[in-house]
Length: 374
Ligand code: GMT
Image (cartoon, rainbow, N blue to C red; front, side, top):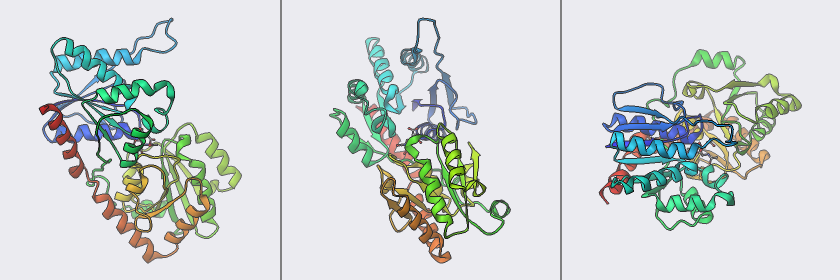
């Protein structure tokens, strides 16, 4: 099949899922065309059946806002026609679904039928999408898509609750390449990071408000009162400055390392004991799945789709959003007994295996087949 994939190219989860999906589809013999305004971060190699089409948005003094959506739409029309695509798969509803539906309608006038699949990732529904100013366009473009998928049951329910969607939404969860995300022997690295045998906690995110990184620090500071530990913060984003300030206020700077954006995240996760995800909302929690695959249990909030991944009392614990005291207690409970920690690590790994790329990508292929055969 010839598949067009539209996604955000940055480090966000939706871009990662879209890119990894495209790479896996190419390996399974499909021809994949990425369409984005920048080369996706994880598109770090090229194969003969992977193509990339950049969207150039022109500027003009009249424009306070560059016409991204219109430019993307025209590019989609062009790529579908020229490359003879069979399907357009857009990731993140805003504005990708609207652009794809518009492109579909333009092409229909020329007698070309291009089915559109929209995958909902999270904030496109739960944060940005909730904005009333966007509701009618989001609802319309979802209803006009030939299929809608969402990364969790929770996100599916939120979509029906916030939008006027009269179509079936099928749940296809996030996935992981277990061959890449597995615990790797990194003893020297671990020794260097924790010379005194400290327990190692980790958090990875794009440091946006929704991730509640300040809670990570508060939890860690409580854990430190009972456990000799260190914290690795991986990623970067708008909250970074506030987080650094809070580190100073809590007087824990010596125990916290800011690693910035990292590509080989599996190498870092491989040496860690516990992952913290106190997010305000999280449609799935791909970062937690990456940790679990590397045998790292997760203490998280019980928001959104996280309970569909993290099993309370088995692969980690779920606590109410903002309850840093409970999250610290659960962290201490897991970390304070070696045998218990080992069991949590094993359960985390077993659970992650259910979300292996080889199990999930065929669900997308099945969706493509159904939509194309209609
Ligand atoms: O919040 C992020 O990390 C980025 C965001 C995105 O849309 O790029 O991630 C969302 O999509 C991921 C992939 O499907 C999910 O695993 C994340 O849970 C989801 N983030 C939120 O819902 C906050």
